[in-house]
Each structure stands twice: as C-alpha cells, then as structure tokens.
Length: 473
Image (cartoon, rainbow, N blue to C red; front, side, top):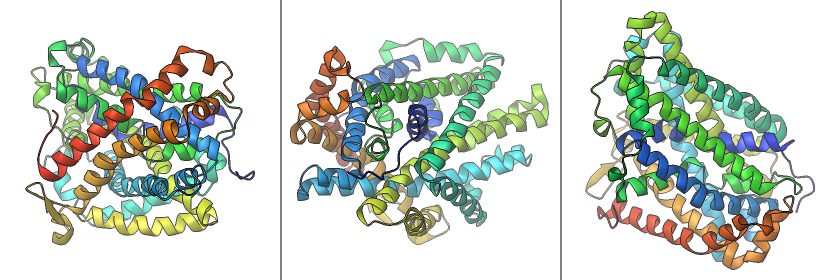
C-alpha cells in the first residue's frame, strides 16, 4: 500500500465524485425512456428495489476492494491474490472495459456539446428538424467539438484527485442538481403535465413482466457505474477512517434521486407536448429521445414563452446533460489513467497523454461509424445484422462485459477474499456496520443470488447479442 497515494479531501467530495460517475446520460435520458416504455411507475418501483437490493451491495464490494488494496482494479486483484493469473484477467477486464466505454461515451458527449452550442446560438428550429441529427453526426465539425471536450476532460484530470476530480465534482454536481430542479419546476407548470406525472408515479402492476424486470435491473446496474472499475479506483482514494457503507448509500440515493427527477422532467414534458402520447410507442433509443424528440418539445415551447425563451430552456437542458456526461467520462477515464500510474509508475500527465492519444484514435473510429467511413460503418456482422465499430464497442464492453465484471467482483470478495475480511473492511470507519441486519444481507446477497442474477444476464446477453437467441425475456 502506497503511503503517497492521492485521496479525496472530504467525504462530501468522494460522494459527489462517485455520484458524478454514476449520474450520466443513462440517468437523465435512459431512465425516463425505460420508464416511458415500461409502464411508468412499475418501472420506477422495480428500478428502486434493484438499486438498493442488488446494486448497492455490489457497489460496496467494489469500493471495499479498492480501499483495502489502495490500488487500481488490476493492482487490487493482483495484490490481493498473490498475482494469480485468472484473477489478473479479471483486473485487466476492469481496466480495458472503462477505457472502451470512454470511447463511445466520448462520441455521445461530443454530440451533446454540439447541440448545446447550437442551442446557445439560437438554432433550435434546426435542431428540431428530424434530418438534422443524421447530417450532424456526419459533419467534420464533430472533430472540433471533440478537441474542446477532450480539453475539458484533460483540465479536470490533470489536477489529480483532490484538485481535479473532487474540485470539479463540487462545482458540476450542485450545478447539475440546481438546473434539474429548475427544469422540473418549469415542466410541471406546463399544460397537461400532470397526465405525465400520473403515468409516471402510479404503478400499473400489469405491466411488470420479464422485459420490464430485466430492463430495470440493467438500467440500475449500469447507471451506478458498476462493473467499470470506477468504484474500485475511487474506493482506493478513500481514507480508511471514512464510513464507506454510509457513503455508498449516499451515492445510491443521489443517483436514484436524479433518475427520479429526470423522469419527472421528461415524461410530463412529453405529455404536455402531445396530450395523446402513447408512451409505449416512443423510441427505444436514448439517443433518439435526446437528439430528435426532445428538441421538438423545446421548439413547441415558443408558443408560450417565445423562441428566445424556448432556446434558453433547450440550452439549460443540454448544459445539464453535458455536465452529467463530463462527470461520468472523467470517472471512466480515470480508471486506465490510475492503472498506468500504479502499474507502470507513470506520472499523471504522461499517463493522460498516452491514454488520451488512444482515446482520440478509437473515438475518431467510432465517430466516423455513422456514414463518414464505409469501413467503420459496416465494421462486422453478427446475429444477422451489420454492425458499425461504434455498435461493436457498445455491444461488447457496455452490454456484455459489465455484468460479467459484476459477477467476478462478487465471487472474488466472498470466496477469494472471504466474508470475514469483506465485513471487516466495510466496518473500518463504520464501527456499527457489522452488528446490523444490513451487513448480514450484504454478505448473503453478494455470495448467493446477486452473482447468479448477473451471470444469467451475461449469458442471456451473449446469446441475444451475438446469436440472436433470447433465453430470457
């Protein structure tokens, strides 16, 4: 354990940074889309149950491993197993996965920044045109926007944990919460907004089926940044005197609150825009909702608040999404950077430059996967369909590997590290933790049904994604 390892300056700083990693496009757009498509309140209820019954124990497992080892995921798995080769593979998966997720997340963040710029410039009418998004993602201007986004990420990460990540989180996260609350208040004052509130908050239990359960669990797991090595890395920056279980609960609560508020913003806005909306017919895609549907809603506001007012609302929304995307990509990219610093003894700036060059190359390959390059737009073929390079990255590293990484961390802490050591690590800084029912539940769940559920999700995803066979759903 390195005595010189960087640390968060305060518990609040850690909670905001960890919440920033969790709060992203999945919370602000993916969750409302899932709620809209899957019965509103029914999806919300299942999501909340899964966050606290399944995802919170996994988050605590990841954080405790990081804090105990004081290393990145690869270093943690290696040092805690005496360099056992099979566990080293789990460590490599936890390093490669977040980097590859950063590749496609960078592209989406660039799109968001582009829409933010266009909203601020008053081009809302153009953004509301259904054809705009298709032409925008094939425009060379994307690379100028990418340079700006990468500059922001570099400026935050080069400051390190306390002066970079923590300081940025203390500014961006409160700003995000403030803007979200203002937008929710604004939307709820619109005509017919209460119809959306009713759909969102009153569960229709007849809607709960295998697809809703699987969708809610996947959304909860992914939205909390689990399986990406982030919580292991951030856990390694926590002081041993800090209350880790309490911090984990705060992160889960903040993440769920943002997702809930996002639903309270977007669903009433949809009903207000079109009182005859059938939520089940909305696009399955968060991307479609964010870049094609929502600009139409903002433009429709000009009838009541004028074009400038509608542009201000749209700009505020895209700034909100941009802040969420930046806090997420910063945490995702910190994982491979921390690994280079720990395993290769690199200075932070050198590690940032090296990983940044790789990110630019692979991010550019993803960015041209939408028509700019035929090679990358039809990069491979499986399950009866052509897949772009962008699709391949998402399918492998977001949809497939994350539940596998979650399964591995559960098996590791209970059966390799052992329950007693796991509980002792969580009790450090939280002396009362080991005496309560929650500690017993965490040990039991992480060692029994949670890894089974994650393994089933992994197997089902592999069958569906790559062979076109749905085992469960």
